[in-house]
Length: 346
Image (cartoon, rainbow, N blue to C red; front, side, top):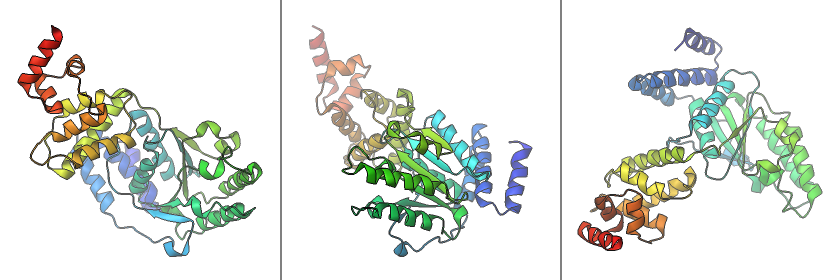
């Protein structure tokens, strides 16, 4: 931690800049965590998360364009490269330099939307997601009018410095031209969004996500201050993500044993290993349906889900599964496993 961190804390406090104060406090907590002072890091984060600074922005019943999103507190393991970009984004928001529009691009399940929720939690901002079904209209010209009305509401928030607007899968409204019967209509909608983005209050954080970045035109890309690619996962990153998710679910269910080594071997059988969104569903289902009397039945369920109930002892042996581990994932006794493997060798 440097002197500038303390000076920034004082500066943000005196300026009543809550977002900047929280961002700086989070950076300090990260420093304590990096030097092994985990208790102090957790204490700082607990202080920030317990602060009650909720200020209502809008009446949800008065708006048909927005849905308020609960941010939660689930773990969000990210590769180092993506995590660094997200932390940089948080710092940029806290510095109040007018950098407030961000695009998260990447395949489904890579953590784009969940990252937005975590950013809202860390910065203590309310998160509102746009309901595109209320924006898109079949009547000629109505979609553009709805877009103008939507952004008028965005700029009308009571406390713009306490809100994040999420356009989840923005391509649904701005770029879905290949599936449109009226390309000119969607083109006009896109042009309207571009104009309205230029008029957003700098204090409001605007984040959009997309799975179709390659279809974005240059005019759309230029509107964003920063673009983060969420597809930068290597195999080891995904194994680490899977382990974090496993530990989180086991802590919640408390009805299964831990065998992380075997768990990683099972996940490693997947080719390719899916992104976090799908991993989360696979692991959660295996644990939720486990047998309370069998500490490791979830591992067997996980293995069966991955292999589609196709047991191959030879493959398991080639992947360095021990006889005991093969017994756990297949339900076949160790003695039978040994006999079968000896028979296959002959």
